[in-house]
Image (cartoon, rainbow, N blue to C red; front, side, top):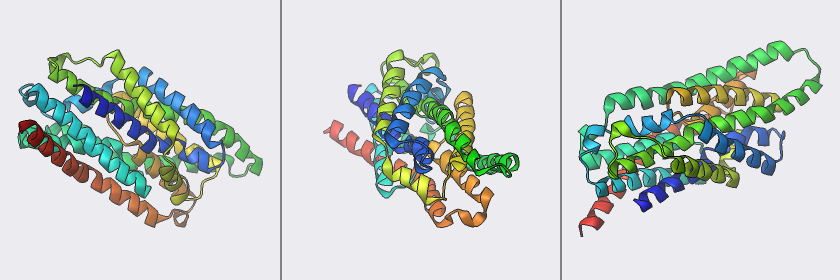
Amino acid sequence: MYISVGMTICFAFVNGFHDGANVVATIICSKSMHPVKALAIAASAEFAGALLLGTAVAYTMAGSILTTEMLDHLTAGHIYCLVISAVGGAIIWNIITWFLGLPSSSSHALVGGLIGAGLIAMGPGGVALDKVTKSVFLPMLLAPGIGMAGGFLIFYAIKALFGSAHRSVGNLFTVLQKPSMVFLAASHGSNDAQKAMGMILLVLIAEGSTAESMIVPEWACISCAAALAVGLSVGGWRIVKTVGYGICRLEPVHSFASQMTSTLVILGASLIGWPVSTAQVVASSVMGVGSSSRLSGVRWSAAANIAYAWLLTVPVSAAFSALIFGLLMRITAS
């Protein structure tokens, strides 16, 4: 039990410096806030958001990926190994994409990890395909489009309102970015910390809780929120450079438009229980903002590399997870 919980908290930490980097990327790269100050404020907001904005996503992760009826028939040891394998596969993929500077999705890496381990542990019937399609794959497909369209429209509206204003209006957006970053960080904390909480709920099933009576314990909320916040405070600088510099040239007004778009999408998803990808939403909103100025303002080759990473996340994480689960079964059987 303790190893599976510890691995889950490690995943929350890695999620923090990987996906959390997207939260501060635009405000740092638009030179609106010093990196250390941005990380400190964002980490505090992440922690608060994870504790205050509900647990709907945690229940989605625990109850909508794998078939709960089959989970109830697994031994405690098998569930522990399943959780270790799922978060282990997600961590490996996150480290690879961090090294490459690609803002892939920790959310989808964890989903892939659950699918890979679940298939080996319980067979094809162990994955709740209908629920996964509705609760995971549908948001995964919709989120980038919503983020890009939202970024385009919000920046277009800003241009319409302030297009003829004096250049000093840029100072206004430098100021506005700070509260918008706080809201974005809180939204990210509310969505991503809950994914780790969902893994802890699976551990509680192994401890004897039924899927219908699961409640996220307070210690799980606090530990996952803290791990996410600490991870963000470390700063995934490779991801910051890709999102902040690699997609398009960012000024304070672009950063503000991207932050507002991302906050609305992620907060809405958290409230309805959709485990969306912060990396996808932030990167796509930056693309939308950049293309609203002019299509040639977006480095589409960099955007294509990010898209390839998104497409590979679920299958590669599933493969890593399946391999880890198979190895654990051999080790425990010997």
